[in-house]
Image (cartoon, rainbow, N blue to C red):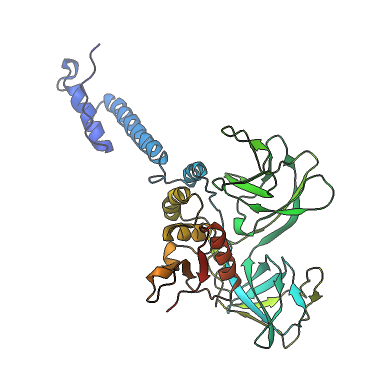
Length: 396
């Protein structure tokens, strides 16, 4: 049987319909046939519809096969997994606060609740993540720390381990991964050790390293541990969990962009203190001021265009802070900024008086004394080349 000579030169539905009619009209059985007013027009409609549907489907399918043309978040998550990149979900709005006048040995424990208010009376809860210790600065006792908005705080929740898969599953997709803390009691003795988040491209992880990996799923996150054997080298990656292991997690579930715009903050009750420190006393002399103005950077979901830009660069850098784009990618990926334009990076050799071996950076709207700047500097220093010093604040 000869192949029909149908020429589909257009992807528009009407053109497909006309080309099918044109082909059928060449058959002697349908000479002078009225396609518009006959039952055959319905069949032609179905043929054109099926052809158009398949074209659209194939176009979508091909687009989702490549990260540059993907339109669905699920596809980008899959592509990012191959690059060793964990796609974040919802992100907390944050603000940096300065606490003054609370005593010389006071401290604020992690997950202390702080109420943020707007001028219109709206109220949301913010939480500390790390302990804040009061220090004497220019004769004034104060502490500077970052708080994160959340509609729910999960604190030290036990999750069941899977020793076969060396993993545990968090059944919450909207957690802010910047706020995630994982603690592990390997033998069930009651002593928990905090594990740090590692990347799949991070080199030299041994069985003595207390690390975990994070993999995003459609309905939550897989917390992956060691104990798995590398098929290429035969070595065991990181420490293994077993059936007696207890795992507990702490994280915040934010409201996303709805947490932006809060500027008036106050403690909810009297905050507790870490072990060995005095509980701070709240009085009229206590001052709690937002140094960053209003809370900001809340996100309902990651920006797809930003993911398409940063995921390939994350893999090419192997999670190392070598070039300016590497550093921007690391900081944006860790949630310290929403776009690379918010990060200024200057090499010491670019200054009028060169300072070799030093890289200076700033995040727009963040002062050097804020916890955000301090932790961002620490993050880049960990990933920078040996001998390179990372300094917050670009010299004028």
